Length: 252
Length: 221
Image (cartoon, rainbow over all chains, first blue to last red; front, top):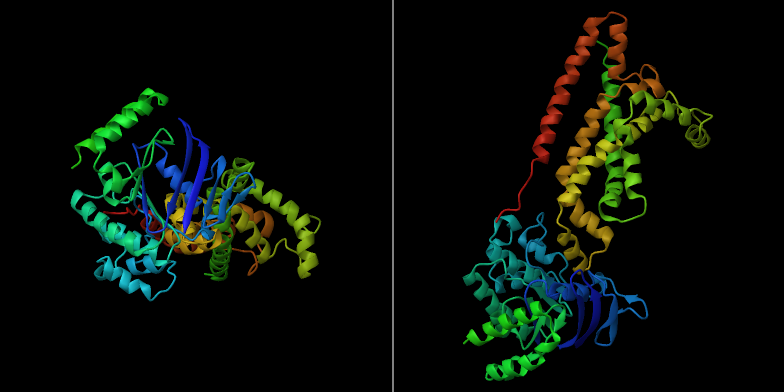
């Protein structure tokens, strides 16, 4: 199972131009400052936005090909998408939200138990906490046994403790689901904690690919290597990149 | 007191409400979610009955509803009876007259629904039609109810348009507002007062209900 993406899209402040692929059981983290184009990428992968040019294929199945005018609507991509916040259906209980498009309703109780929200199953989303809502959103996304999981800053609205707990759960989850996972975040420590591959982004471009297992040792060499490449970037992007590298070095 | 006009008013209001809620929901969907050329012109046209003098609207409806008019001719061909001065005729007129009152609260309710909910539904595999029934409608129930109530009381109070296209045929088109007017003309103040006394509390209660339904509900933390 492999997702291949190569897309270009004109955005108000810059051009998005990225290519990457993501294999099953691997979590690919897109990390960068807000406004780098990360969310636009996963919206395009989900079929909620269209690229100006490009191609997206999943296991050989073409989802988008602008040359051939192919565009598979989101309904037919069969993926799971966890948004930043507030996308549970307010009129349904937790259990019915998870069952909303579940592949098999028998999965629902075990999912709720696994994510510790079984006791909330009869509550409406506005009667549970932010962390509980995101657990529910994750359950909803995986209950339909998606072919690909997209996580768009799912923890950014949560407090630090809840965030850390959920990160641990997602880390476990990614090993169990044998599908590709794309995770968008502005938090580099989160990207390195969850990601197998990390793609730092600024100004609509992917700077390089960090394979987490190899890079944790040689961070300063990584910066050196990169400083040489900085010439190609504008001053704002350079500043963003320095911040990204600074936070990388501060991390233990 | 003759109860027939009151009964006729309630019947007219009920039929108009049921039909309008069903017709207005897809129209509102079109206005809120679909982009098309000439949308603002279309929306203004649908809102026009709200600002036109009822007699002007009634006059145009009269023209198209007579057996010589387009709609009147079509109706006669299909049903064998004329449209003008009949109950069906005043139902049709009420539908046009109250349409903007059905659309406005629904539009406000649809617009309050977070777009991300719809996107989430699409990603979860729902077609736009299923999303309409499974996500939009359940989250706009209060707006739909407010629409229904507003249409109901607005139709109860209708006078000018009905007078133009319905006249005052007892049991067919003589609704309460017209019966009140005629009672006053005939100096039967007592009859007029009785009917007014019934209409005022009904309208007032329904307005209170609308206020309850449309009060903002906040997605708490």
